[in-house]
Amino acid sequence: MNRAFLRTVAVLAALALSFLSAPPAARACGVSTADGLSACSLSEHEEAERPRWHAGASGVYTSTAIRFDAGQTASETRGSVVASLAYQPRPRWSFQVAAGATLGGSLDTPSGRYDFSPGPAAALGASWRAVPGTRPFVLVTSTLSFSTASTRPSVALRT
Image 1 (cartoon, one colour):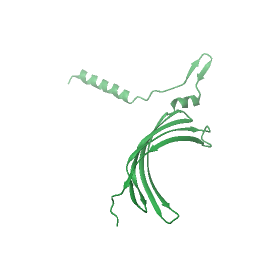
Image 2: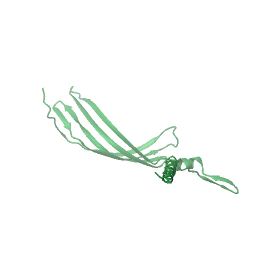
Image 3: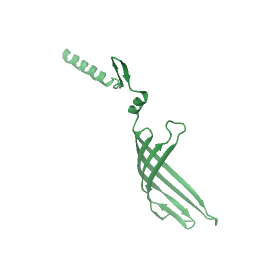
Image 4: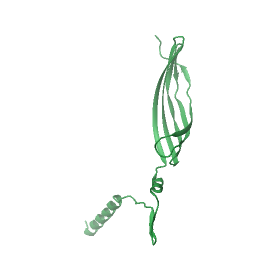
């Protein structure tokens, strides 16, 4: 191969490598003027850099036993999964939305066993940190949630 071509390829490869390994852009807040240094505060910098979006996922399994006065018992089991997304426009405010599904479960009663069908689940909420800082940590929240499922008698064989 031609030496000039190889040199060109080597230079282009070195340039590409330097761009790929370059440090991220530095951000600063301030200016030096004739009358001294003028800069933003640390709290202004932290607010500018604070993440606003948060994502999460959760799963839950519940098992509840119910005992009645007459000595009868019942039990319920359910499972669900939910994905959530939150937006925090200010350090003390957060707004959340969640969607997922109830995975099913069962209700065992003295009159028989009933299966829960899978169904949708959703939630919408907001929270406000009532006291600035972390001590004491006081959070006021409100969430509107929805979940639906139907029941049907179990087809499991009884003994």
